[in-house]
Image (cartoon, rainbow, N blue to C red):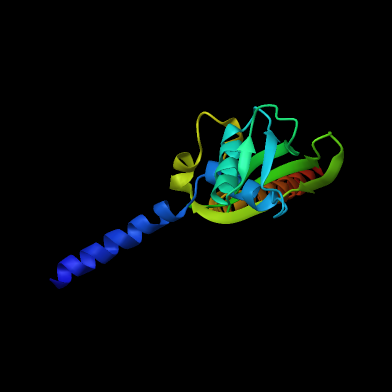
Length: 195
C-alpha cells in the first residue's frame, strides 16, 4: 500500500510542472485580458480587432460575454466602438541553467473607445510583461507552430568549466612557457657564439 502511495505521489509530482505551465499563447491571452479593461457602464459595443493574433480577440470576446456584455463585430452605428491594435507580441528565453529557462512574454496593446458618432472618448496603451521559469524540455510544448509570435529561439548555452577556465589557462601556460624557452635558448646561443 505504501509503495502505491509513494509511486502515486511521485508520478503526480513529476507531472505537475507540465500541467502548471501555461502555453505562450495562453500567456498572451492573459496579458490581453489584464490590459484591456472596459468601463462598467459599457454593456454593448462594436469591436474592431486586427486580423493578426485572432486568439486574443477570442479571449477578449469570451471574457466580455462572460461579464454579460454584448459584443458585435458588424457595423452597428448606434453603438460605441472598441478598437484595439497590437503593437508588439514577443516571447524571449534566457538560460538559468542547463535545464531551466526564464520565459518573458511581452504584449504591447493600444485600445480606443469611440462614441457612436466616432468621437474619441478614451485611449489606453499598455505593455504588460509576464516572466516565469520553465523547464527547457517543455519549451516545444509551450509554443504553437501556427503562430510565430509564440516561438523564440533558445539562447546559446553558457560556456562550461572547460571553455571558461581550462582552455584559457592552458593557452596562458603555453604562451608563458614559449616565451621563457625562446629567451632562455636565445641567451644561451648568444653566450656560445662569443669567443
